[in-house]
Amino acid sequence: MNIFRQMYKYSPMNFYTTNENKTVIKSINNTSLGYEFDRVFDIEEIKSAWAQIKVHKRISTILIFLTFIALLYEYIFPQYSFLVNNSWYVNAVILLIVIGIVCQIITYFCTKMFEKNLNKKFGSFKKVKFTPSTNIDEQYYKLFKIEVIKVLALITFIIIGFSFISPFYCAKQLLLQQRYKAAVNFTTIGTKIFPIAQEWYSMRGFANYKLGNYQDAIKDFDKAYKLGAEGFNIINFDNKIFIKYTLKDYDGALKDFDREIKRTKDSNEIDEFLWDKAQFLYNINRYEDALTIYNDLIEKAENDRIYLLKDRLYYERALVHKKLGQEENYQKDIEASGIEDDAEIITPIPKPALIFDDETFESN
Image (tube, rainbow, N blue to C red; front, side):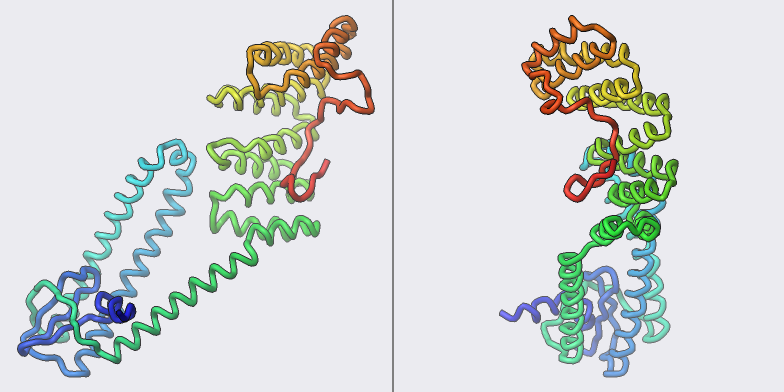
């Protein structure tokens, strides 16, 4: 079986049939609709009909494409935070309905325009059911094969291109080469083209920090965090906290912690935020507040909250007790941690740090 010939049977190029002194031209958007004329078209009329089809096909395609772009940038992207909070099937239904309605409106008007031009050029017609011709018009069959090859070549080129290099890779290389201004410019273009990709904001935030644009960097990391998978992306959140720590905006950072702890529903995420907050409080010398959180986390860890590292929590609380001059409590927590009090082995409570992709490099 010749696959090309089977595909041609239902392709736009198989657009007419002739029989019993009649010609039927296929509609541009409804493949089951045809326009029957009471005469057989000559070669020039067939060419003219094909020219009309190409023009109207392009008009409808361009209009649908531009409408899709408008929906994408005016509705889908701006409403992204709303959409991610819905179930996928709810979003799919909403978008399919909107796109379907818009496409139907566009195709309706384009079809009416096409019918008007057919009537003007070839005279009156009758609407009938279009049955694809089983005869192969070699001229249009050749054109069909050329178009198929073009599409396949384009798809292959895109796949190969993205297999070897991606825009995110290019942006990352600019950062690795310390070309921060170029990285800001490049990632800004990325945010305009695909504004829901968190990578653009994360990388631009890093570049802005390196350029000293701290407020811009905070906004970028905050945006990247909000666009993270299921609203959770701790690295971008921690980077925002690091910049506020560097700027000594401690109250602003603590408000960010409290906002996320209140917003988050997952107990694992809540505990992770609380632990980070406790470490942050320790590093800004608010030991009493840090101790309160460590007490809560250790109580949870004792109740089989398995993802809380109990030994490490006891050790960090011991360091808080030491800062508060509570030597007896310090010794008790050191013993409970099971970790020897050896400065060469034990890592201190970590300070906020700027991290960009743990597979590439870190910057403190």
